[in-house]
Image 1 (cartoon, helix red, strand yellow):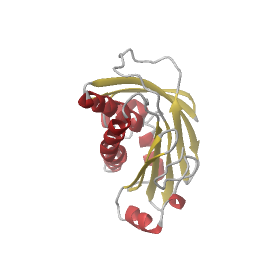
Image 2: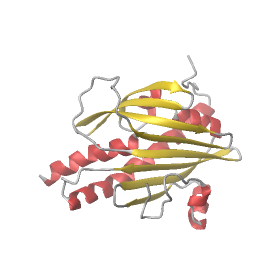
Image 3: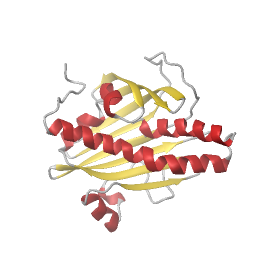
Image 4: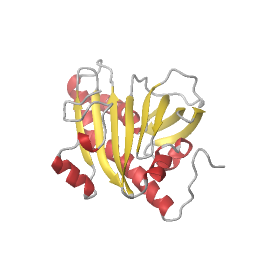
Length: 230
């Protein structure tokens, strides 16, 4: 029984943080705030040195996860990577299908299917973009919209909101990724917290690691294909 509950939560939480999305009682700023101002001096130095700094916590409505990291690439390239929704299935963790439905330059619906352990989840997120020269933000929330894929979900979720903020730092890019997740309170509290505390240490860093790797591939001569490419 306990093992089954943990497996169910594994699929649920990895979905939320993989979508590729509130305030954290563990020191993260509200979702509307991002960038260097959200870091302490020590954390900032760790990020500059190449570490991924992570903050986790919970408040009265959700569990929160946040990473701060530096990416060795210009902000335009990193922005292209995190909006390359059609190819998330090629480089984002757990993603087996992905497709973008663009409304305009500032709004897109992301259709995705992930598979974690024995569980599959088919979902749609609405992304709203702020595309400044030196600071760019992608905000997302769960969307009630007809799905493009017909894969049947193994679990039913009430998820997720978040945002990914990028800032230009010379020729590098500062990344601030935040996700707020709601999980059914029908699951025993100690099981839920245990599963999340284990998974968050793997799932959240893997997202920024995937973005870093993809950016490096593009800069080193890989094919740079985005939503505007044929």
